[in-house]
Amino acid sequence: MTRLSGITPSGHIQLGNHLGAIRRWAAEGKPEDLYFVSDLHAMTTSHNPARLRSLAGEQLAVLIASGISPDRVFVQSDIARELGALTWILECTCSYGEAARMIQFKEKSKGQAGVRLSLLTYPVLMAADILLTGASEVPVGEDQRQHVELARTLARRFNTTYGEVFTMPEAVLPPSGARVRDLADPTRKMSKSNQDSAGVVFVLDEPDQIRRKIKRAVTDGLSVPAYEPEERPGLANLLEILAACTGGDPAGIAAEHKSYGALKEATAEAVVETLRPLREGANALLKDPAELDRVRKAGAARAAERGEHRLQSALRLIGAG
Ligand code: AQP
Image (cartoon, rainbow, N blue to C red; front, side, top):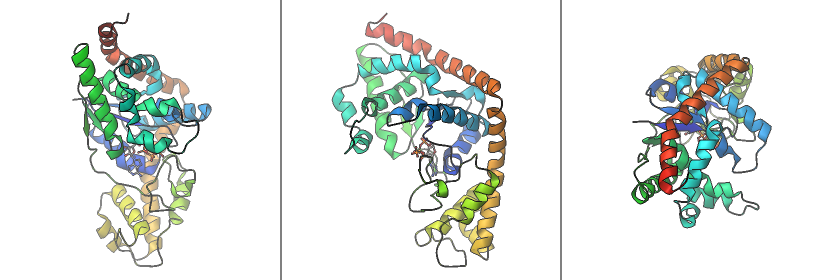
């Protein structure tokens, strides 16, 4: 059983990515699981090449600093040749209608001028990510389930038409983790690509920046903390963040704090301490580009080697080479 999970460098890694996904990957991942920085997926809409390159390196450093073994991490574009070749094979296995039916494509392309072709075809690249690495389980949210279904369809079609090559992947529900909301607008989730960063705590933020953002978090006009997610979402968000950092339960934590000020202070300190090892570890790696490059090349070589026999078999069976 190999699980494959990715993070897209559409922005700096934020607290929600860490509490909801990355720390779990580090704690629960099995030795055969794989984690990757999906930089090729960050090019389907307008992007800045220099920023993308820098974010991909930074995200790799954060994944490693979070405790994921460097043996299990790679950057997607480092195996672009293998993925590009397999994407083409899979595009020749996929109908236009199947790609155009993807809900994400319909939603993201609606009303947009100059939609990139890659917005239509990226689910096929995602199928290549999954099938090249031989992943059997892909933890995805509801919005990506249809894409894993497409990967299954393409794997089945290829295997029955040309010969058995690909492992059938399965979409699995990610374990329910903390769902962190934006501090400035608790009606929406915290997101790394949010243009307005006031409500987003980035894992590489300095402690004082974190304290400032949490101090300014939107709450309500009341003064005594209580855990009421529907009525007081901003406060509930802080309680859930504190609970996720310290291991308590939000209602119990609310009862332990007499004022919003005290609660915000406790939350800020807990977040600063939770993120400290990540920030320090990632910054140390980023200051040592030779080491980061060494880890990156080794990860790429392992990922490429892992998929090589599948790619060669697929090319041979489809009549190429
Ligand atoms: N706010 C969040 N709370 C808990 N978990 C979260 N994740 C993201 N935001 C939160 C989890 O982080 C993992 C990697 O995310 P992704 O790169 O696949 O993209 P995403 O889910 O779309 O994350 P963002 O930060 O919101 O990015 P953008 O702004 O690009 O859309 C996933 O496991 C995700 O559940």
